[in-house]
Length: 281
Image 1: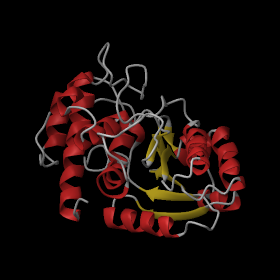
Image 2: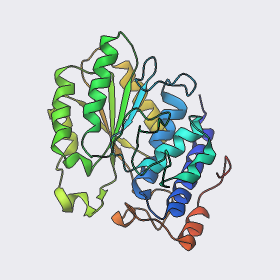
Image 3: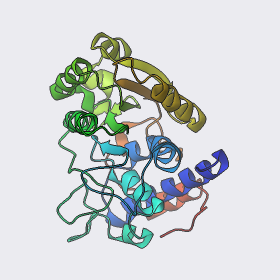
Image 4: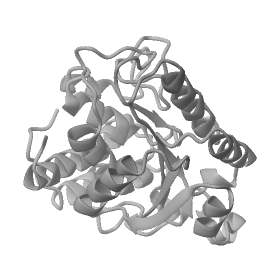
């Protein structure tokens, strides 16, 4: 289990990977990837029970993670590579023709770590429900994790899945919303105001809590608390209070970097703010 200092070093390197991948591809989604980095690093390097060596696409015998907000592949691919699921050097192929590292997660070429193709927003929670039900049916005492976006939460299927999870008492389902307040067309509250998102999840029968999405200690403690509440029959939702573009000052807090690649000068400016800790790919 990684220590706090190690987690911070990993997060810095992952953020460097994100910026470099998107720059090299001249396309991609850095904003949400940067804001959700601290969550994915905490999950894959501390909280999840998983192993690249024994990984199976059906998730048997391990905790499972689903990226519902499938456009945030830069952070997903970096964390998977840094966890040992495939060579870090493969990050050089991001979004290239024929690469396994497509703009949205794909299972066509069998990328280890990816259980299902995603990116048609609103669908990931439904898939996570099915995985959680399957684990219960198979007698597996493992957890299923899923990450949604706040703009994604405008999709109606999210709320159908929310009802399903509560109805079937999927209390080993732990969900997160990257609540950075931004989506591709502008601030979430201006595009389609979600209202009181915390109250909505609780009204749908979930246990819901707002936490600091950039404090890895808080994230870890919250996950541990969720794990200890097994038996209450409630799926868990954590609304991660985050800043889009976290770690790069000119990207922070704006929707303009939702799906925009930095040029060479901007990339150099960003990398100057992020410490290389594990070696660039």
